[in-house]
Length: 320
Ligand code: UDP
Ligand code: MG
Image 1 (tube, rainbow, N blue to C red):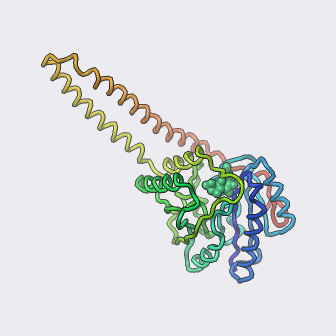
Image 2 (cartoon, helix red, strand yellow):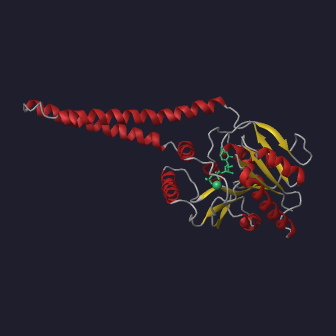
């Protein structure tokens, strides 16, 4: 029978954790009772270097009920790395993993259809938000624009899917072969190409606590997505460069002609404008190229993507 693990990254989630844990626990037990998953299935919280009582709560949950396990990262590495840690550390202990946020904004009732689709041969099942009524207008709008841009740039992502997804052990094995340090899981998983399907659900608002994604980290993730999936921005810069170069040749011819016509004092405005224009363009170009060089720099270091400090497992040993 399917041995299912649920991986839940948590960063300062003391307010929601107990609630979410009991809801997840009920759901897992009902799946066990229906014979859909094995009794050895587990819920694993990955503490992403929280500074509040999150790890303490995970410890209590673990000692009360063996269904709960924990992995503690040595410091805050961000949602994507925490999730990756969960997926990689757990992948050979189970048949499949569902990843879900600690605030349970995603609907755990679709676990059943995810499992069903897996049994029908899918290796990956994406949770997709049907409507995003619970999100503010700006988040909805910017997300849609972002997905459009990303797809245009060649990064394949599923619209309205975040990191709520079901992955089989085979898919996780595939994911483990991606060794990049800068990760954007939503873009990497579709790249593997296994058979997939989607399940749709309504996303509810966060019940307690604040969103751990500030505007700044949201933009950082968005930028990470583009720069790790696509090199089109660099190509775009080259093309713009060529265009501006051609334009400046035209300008040169134009000024020479004006010179011979004796009208040299005109054109101060266009001169000033073009200096600013080209200066700005160059800075932008250097900036974008710099971003990619920065990435290459980080990738060549092969730094670990996460470091585990502690495990809370079935027999509380290091070997999960
Ligand atoms: N999270 C994390 N590390 C971080 C920030 C967030 O592990 O540095 C986790 C967080 O605990 C939650 C998930 O990532 O389980 C998504 O965060 P949140 O719900 O705050 O994001 P939102 O739903 O607002 O996009
Ligand atoms: Mg959330």
